[in-house]
Image (cartoon, rainbow, N blue to C red; front, top):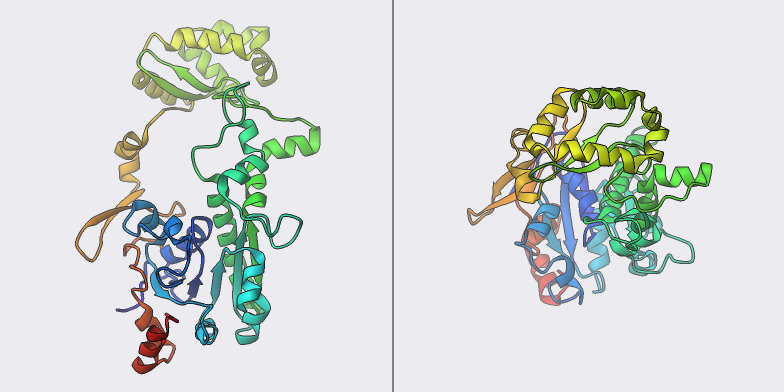
Length: 398
C-alpha cells in the first residue's frame, strides 16, 4: 500500500502518533487530513489494560472519525529492542505526538532530549491533563475534570441549578487544536532555525483559555461570571426564544440590530424606551425586554421568524438536533460531512476539516486502520527485513 495522502499541503511530513483517547488523536487528525504521513503506533492487543476505552471499537464512529487518514502499527515499548525500532522511526519523522502522563515518556526513553539526540529536527508534542510540571502534573486528566476546574461548569446551565457540564468535550478538543497550532508553528520556525523543539499543551490550560472573555472580565474588572442559561452573559436581547411551534436563537446584539428588530416586530416605540436605550440598560432590564419579545415571537412559527429576522439583518437561527443539523440545506452544500467506503465496501461518515484551503484543501480519503494493519509495511520502509519483522512478531515486540 502506498502512503495515504489526503492533501498535498503537508505531504512532506511524517508524524508518529502515539496518542490515545481524544485530545491527541484530534491533534494528529488535523495533520493527517492535510496530507501528513501519519503512523499510529499502539501496543499490541492485550498489552494496555485500558485499550477498550480508546481502541476497542475500531469500527465505531468515534474511533473512525478521530483516526481516519492514518496508517497503524503495533509496538510494545516495554519489550527489549522496541526502543531501537522507535528511534529508527524517529530518524525518519518530523513530529511525534503523545499524551501520556509527564513521567511516562522519560521512563520509556522517548522524552524530548532522547528524541533530539537521534533527530535534532524532531518536534515532540506532548498533551497532558495538567501540563508537564506543577503540583498536579502527575494526575490523570479527563475532559469533565477540566471543565470543572477550568470554570466552564460554573457558567453553564440555568441560574441556580448548580454546575453543569457542556455537552461536548471542550477541553479535549481545544487542547488538541492548540497542540496542532503549536506543531505547525514549530514546523514553520524550523524552516529558519533548522531545529526541532518540544511543544506541550494541557487540557486545563486549554479549558481556561476557552473561557476567554469570562476569564478576562475577572482578571481585569473582577467580574465573576455566573450561569446565564440560554441568555448571553452581557448582551440583550441575545438568547433562546419560543415561537408558536418551537425554539429559535436570536442574536440582536448591538444598537443597529436592536433598532432593526424593533421595527421588524412592529414596536418602534421600544427604541426610545429608557429601559432599552443601550446594551447596558437592555441587559439590566433583560427580564422585561425578553418578556415583551416573547409575546410577539409566540404568534408565528420558527421558520417565519428565522427568515424574517435574517432578511432584516438580525442574526437568528433554529435549534437543531443532530439529524436536523445534517439535513440542513446549507450544511449539505458546505460538504461538512463526507461518506467514505472502508475496505469491505461499507460507508462510514466523517466530519470534514473546518479550515478550508483554496489550493491544497484537506480531505478524508481512508477510514481508520485496523490494529497493526501497516506494521510490516512501515518497518520495511525503515529498513527491517521480513525475517527481522517475523522475529519481532514472535517476541511480542510488534
